[in-house]
Image (cartoon, rainbow over all chains, first blue to last red):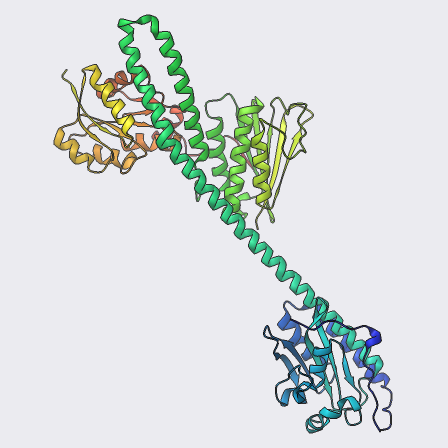
Length: 427
Length: 154
């Protein structure tokens, strides 16, 4: 919500003097105070943690340090209504009068705040008693003892979303020099508003990403559980029944047709290998044991993958990786990556030893899995996102790391073997 | 030795039927009941006087809990777990619960009936990958998940 920008220093509002003597120039004392106020306001801009505190601090400093009678920030609400969101000091006409509106044909839309918001440019008056521009507002200003005022639009992405209005009991405090200074203040506040908007957007995007990762992980885990159940309940049972009946057949054939035994053995072997493969797949599809710490969870994964094979492995946790508070979906993804990477080593590397190094960092967890195997085939580029057929595991690992907001790299080691490193942020 | 009175509990129809066929074809076993779940199994075992229970692990009311209930009976039957699930934790759970055997579905072979007879005679058969690990874990010989080499560095 806001009004289009039409501001530059050239558009700086120069009061149109009425039938009165021109006001005296700002004293050096006032200019110094204005500079000091400007410095403090800029500090407030840097320190502010959110927009409301920025507005209230700006008003507070303007009154207490700047010595102005009152300061106010009025903002446009989502419905386009003008709402006073911060105020300090003795009340000014904008504050004591009827609600501010933006309609220029409405008397309530004639004050400096309304003008600054509507026209998206500063509105100053050095002496509201004589300033022609303040004529229609003069009565209420006089009633409140306001002699000079300055209203500056505060912008988000160039659009006026609020106005900072300062009121003084003294004429001439807002001459061109001071006016330019305060326009700079307004610009700085606007920059901070843009910063907060960017922070809010970033936070929103982070939250969305976290939510997406959670949904992705939940969907993946649900799908894995469904696949595991299907494999267990259908394929494995059927194959197991066939294998059992083949055993029965073999016993019978032993006496009546011993020459058929080798053939039955061959069929049985094929069925057994297929069933064993599916049983391994069931283990790989198992969800990560909840509640286990990292070391235990990775130990289980490595044991499962390498049990029964002539492969030794070590697990090294540098720093206390278990204190790294990975969100649950991130942890599931990280453990999936570890398992898949280890399975990839088992299937392709021909390794005799595997080192698993886990480093807990404040921002997340970095894991490296180094094997002493045959290394990547010469025609495989470790930097290629999809190294080609037969290396689907690596592609999956990369996809998972990327989905978690992290990264995954594959290195060809000079000593032979391969190192896979990945990072998953804590989010 | 008379026929071994046997109960079969498996929620897969094909597997249950194959087990029954194989057992009955030998003439050594009498299948006294066949169930598709572990629900009510102890009662049926008491009623039928089954000496041997062939028990699926991953089915409703099956697994370690069913084994414990069966083994808690006054005349506990021999429990032989037959499952596609062969991870160390599950196998050791069943052994701790009192199963005499853990056999991997798809790797029963033509020695299945011989394995059953061994168990009825008091022997233990653990014919799964990593059986030693499962036994050690069931016996508490090593902590459940002892990393082979965990180095903590500051």
